[in-house]
Amino acid sequence: MTGSAMGHPVTNPPINPALRIPTRRTTELVLLVFAVLLVAAAEAAVGAARDGHFSSRLATYAAVPIVVGIVTHLVIRKVARYADPLLLPIVVLLNGLGLVMIHRLDLGLKTQAEQYGNHFDGAQAPTQVVWTALGVLLFLALLLIVRDHRTLQRYAYTLALAGVFFLMLPAVLPARFSEVNGARIWIRVAGFSLQPGEFAKILLTIFGAAYLVQKRDVLALAGRRILGIDFPRGRDFGPLLLVWLLCIGVLVRGHDLGTSLLFFGLFVVLLYVATERVSWVIVGVLLFAGGAYVAYRLFGTVQTRVSVWLHLFDPKYAAQAYQMKQSLFGLGTGGLFGTGLGSGHPELVPLPATDFIISSFGEEVGLAGLMALLVLYGILVARGLSAGLAVRDSFGKLLACGLSFLIALQLFVVVAGVSRLLPETGLTTPFLSYGGSSLLGSWAILALLLRVSDAARRPATTPPPKAPTESFEAVMA
Image (cartoon, rainbow, N blue to C red; front, side):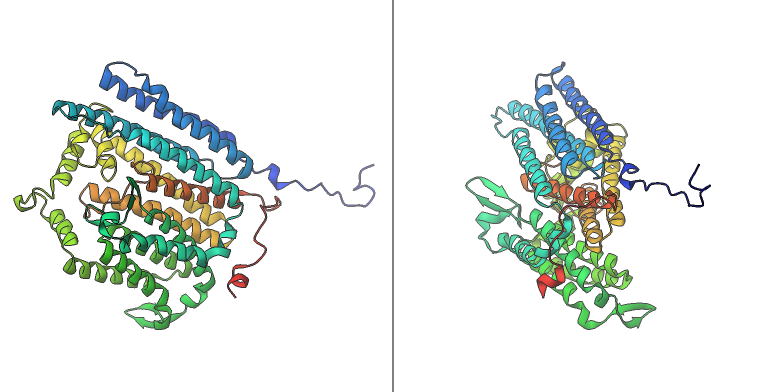
């Protein structure tokens, strides 16, 4: 006799929600295999175009994404099993393609040097392999140490001090230790160079997210209404003005418009997301425009870059505009489908593996290939923002938003500079460009985004990693 016949209600046993939410790790593995195959095909194309056959270097440069993919996938499967399955494959693909292009540029520069009777010993691809390994180690360390992204709130002010120290250090060092191409954003000692601003932007993003979680109610209060827009109260401008002055200080001392734009744009976006007030964006844009105008009037480096941007083909700026003109010629040569990997001459552009690697790709894969790369970045940013929308805590939302916006804004500034939509700023392309600081910072951003996405997709009944024992407010009290 059934329970209902006995007069008792029939109750079905509860279904564990964890059984209904797949971890999607198999999906991640399949996408990683596809990414590795694309990188191997790209390296094979370079070898076939340069040597007429598949080179033995194919195994070397295909092994890098294979090892990276396997190691990172196994760790994620263990410590962040609900993380977004698309983020890692996209990054492995971008990092691998960047390595292929850097190797291809090494071959082109070597041929160019031999034509002029010079010896070429500046290969950058082996060094990029080492930086990739270090970036992956940093990525794994962050995943293993930061088991819950909310823990970072406890150290917000400490991280802010470290970020400001990293940001200002090159500006206070003598020029011989910090200046490259007119910008004082490096630390150069004994042949070793590091760009501390790449780490400062992550630390200040964490601080900005933690601070705005604590202060957003105050910042959202309306002040005066001007032209139909509610502006914040005057006494609430403190944080924005402080960041504005910091960015102007970096620009004044370091002559670095790109980094200033990146930091200031980041904080304005975080303010807008936290308060949902357009007035903060308007005030921020006006402050940055005012600071940029002052910098233009005071510094010859900024004036030169703007003049080259506006008068690219003026004979007066022939020497300063050479790099930009070569970049545009390369993009034009690539056309719609490109010359083919290994078949163009992107090495004719100065700094083709760093500031202008987008131009190098544009020449050899064309507009279609370049758009495919931008779509990959778009998916990466969209998935980061999606994790921010889905995570349950406010700090995680702001953190994921800020880190995703960092990638989006930096990519926009780089592509706009290469295509002459904006003045060239000297920023590098995340995951693609040659450079240790940029690659380490980019892998660190990926680790934090994966940690937030793991918290967002984890079922509510599944215990999260051990949370901080004290609240942010209690620690700062």
